[in-house]
Image (cartoon, rainbow, N blue to C red; front, side):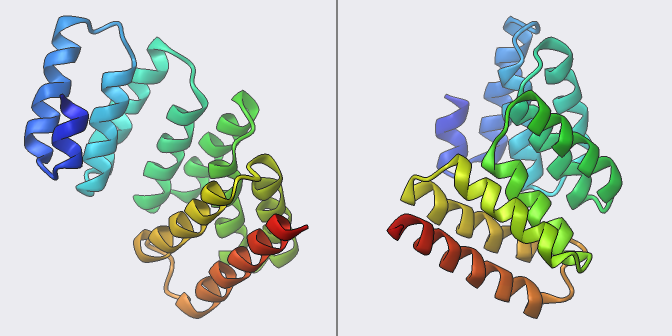
Length: 171
């Protein structure tokens, strides 16, 4: 029910539904993650981090680490965010974490390392829809990241990612 409310844009109703699920069984990790996702969409990164840490205490999951890393990065705590992205990758290699690592390295002028992470993301998920989704995720992060003042280089990188994904798809 919370998912449906969230998809309909009814964030308060979604949060209420997820919190009911938590009250019924506080030992299940997923509702904490769902709460964190809604909170992150609302820019409440500290509250999101709190819920993700609760989720991780209940169940080690690559996606929880990824979201926690993203929450730290979006709250301008990049170094802590990187640590959680690395944990995510150690738990399960995933294109989301590789993609975000690519963005972070590009932002710090490490183009070669950034491209390497892009290629690892593409290698992991060769499905066209997912690669297109990675490009959309990249565009979303360009708009959200607090240090994305150099939009020109990030937009070029987004275009490069799309070109890499198209080329990889055609190969």
